[in-house]
Image 1 (cartoon, helix red, strand yellow):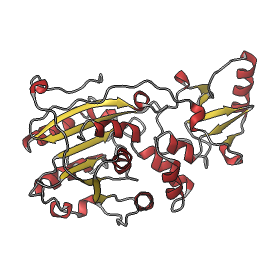
Image 2 (image 1 turned 90 degrees about the horizontal axis):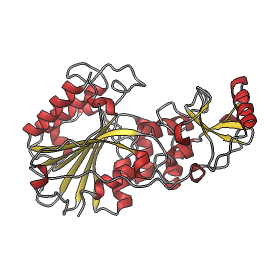
Image 3 (image 1 turned 60 degrees about the horizontal axis):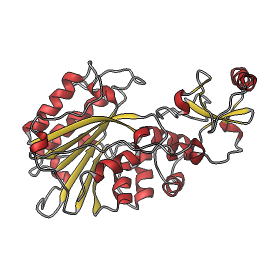
Image 4 (image 1 turned 45 degrees about the vertical axis):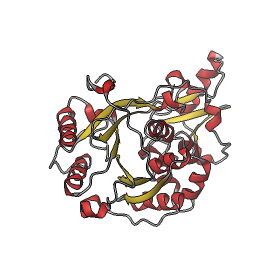
Length: 344
């Protein structure tokens, strides 16, 4: 489906929403907390109010990064009352829900997100249950998922979700945003929906020029496990040399196909991208006469995450989990731009 911003014809006449109270952040499907990272780096006045994350490894990274002590918890085991939404006159409750994409994405099996389907992506409807159970609704909701969330096969369910939110009083604004348009050298397109309680205008952030180079993400690596040594890779390197190709930046390679990535841009990092244990990663770089995969730290950098946050997570998780957490997360720079549109 072609990317566009969902607009009500009367939207431009509506007042622009601004958060002018301290934020109580509720993160459903929190992962490592990229939403909290974005608010922190933006200097927003917020607190980690509730965090719901089932993966014990992800919550370990979350706690290490944010200095919290949240347990791993199953969203199906909590109630609306557990969200603790009170004093909405004093606080803005901002609830994020980046529900599982495995059954929507091209990389997955596209089982869908229908209500009652039992799929991982169908956990979206647990959010519906919670919103029906709470006495006070969060003032702002932010959804993030793969663009396939509104593909032809999923559009009926996506529209059903929007209609539910409208019935609860939310004005909903959604658009596909690409990380490469917000200062990160990764071709990662995701659908974001901002839902605001009441009738409000919201405009998604404008694109910015991409100025960063691949070299800005790289860390010198001498670990042999990061280098690809096989006949296919050797032939590719040889062919590059014969063509005497000149690049101003490091050459980014699609390692499965052994070809130069389009526009020399890193593609979408997924949960198995760049996994050094299998040498089956999607993207690598040419260093001299060798091809190597991105390290876990470099993958985190490609998500906009700081080395400080990576080092905190590295203390509590394995390399394979760190790769997975990068692929599962949300590019921080995109979130910062969205939050800037909301915060006074």
